Length: 290
Length: 254
Ligand SMILES: Nc1ncnc2c1ncn2[C@@H]1O[C@H](COP(=O)(O)OP(=O)(O)O)[C@@H](O)[C@H]1O
Ligand SMILES: [Mg+2]
Image (cartoon, rainbow over all chains, first blue to last red; front, side):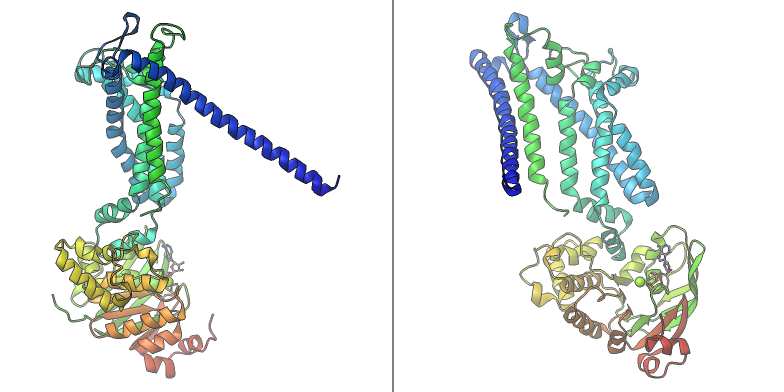
């Protein structure tokens, strides 16, 4: 066998391996969606929308599968987290890149990156110690609440969001800033009309990534939200999210148990929401600065 | 608004970055409506001089300015100078074309919008006039909504000139505006500078000695932060008074 033939053979083997790996991944993906989708579909057909995603009562042992409180819970904590975290992260990014001396930037990035690396269970723990008592003082009750979960999530996503915003702001070249100032713009006008405007797309993208993280987070939420299954009457009342409820019920509803497939429905809802976010980022991403 | 192009008076101007003095005791007068070319080896302080005139040097931490600069009656140096007003009077064109990542129209309309002009007819007229003044109108009419980045380098530089003119400045600072451009685009910008003469006081920093000779009325030669010589361009180029100037002009310097 010549060297050339040998190379050809190795190449063919390699290609076959890659192909097999890709096929396996795609097959796994289909199997995953298929199982979830099939379980969820049968569940919907049996119980109807009104008694699942539009239902208000959740008591799987009694055959009640209303998921609306969890859907609202997920949306509420995500909204609170994003609304609190986004302006904060934006200020961090602007201060780090535009206000403070340039030589501090890498230090700030390191510090923020180290915060982004904190596991979510630590944030939950911090939430128990600090946020739950704070909410108890602010809104009464036990403090375990939708508001506490939102605040913990906010703290959790601020570092990631800040890093993304810093990266976006670093893409704004100095010559645009100087060009704007030289035309008689104030620093504030330059910030709004050139800097932020030119990085709108990556900033929106960062926001979507943050929403995704908040929506998907389980542990930190479960530790402070209070785990109540009916519709929270206010943000200071306890509640549940889709993720925290799945975590809660996994032991309660093992495969084969009556109502196990309600877990499929919740998982599918989360998956669809996250997939939607990924698609959004894909659509915005790839667009150049400006 | 007075359209009279103002003269510029510089009195004993010294500038330091930290403890490094890069302009040393510079005094000079630029007559209104004329083009002054500023030449000299790189690092001699030409850009710093321009950036004092619109106070863009303020961006450098630890900068010190001593002395006096007046644009017409307007005091440029001091702690309480209205930088917005100054920069509306004194426009700048940079070495590398730096259009914003917006449309052609939005680039030119940027300055007027800062001044609160919102009326779309007024903006359109202003943009058109500025582009005409910058000899770019014929090339971009009908393409005003295209991104500025779709223009060629030379067109982008003329767009930046239009953008500066749209603010109705009295002085135009140009820091090696053609050093990044091809000869044809360079020629267009030189022609343009000649048409701006009279209406604006222009200070043109250039590495290109022929360019200085072609477009300027006066030439200032700087070396190591000192103003060595300033005079009518013809005289500076044919009968320089200083040996250093002659050496620089004949390429025996650097
Ligand atoms: N931002 C700055 N910080 C410190 N030193 C600077 C800065 N900008 C320029 N310099 C120094 O000042 C001197 C003059 O620079 P500059 O005005 O850019 O000269 P030119 O435009 O003639 O090349 C140079 O020695 C340069 O290294
Ligand atoms: Mg320079």
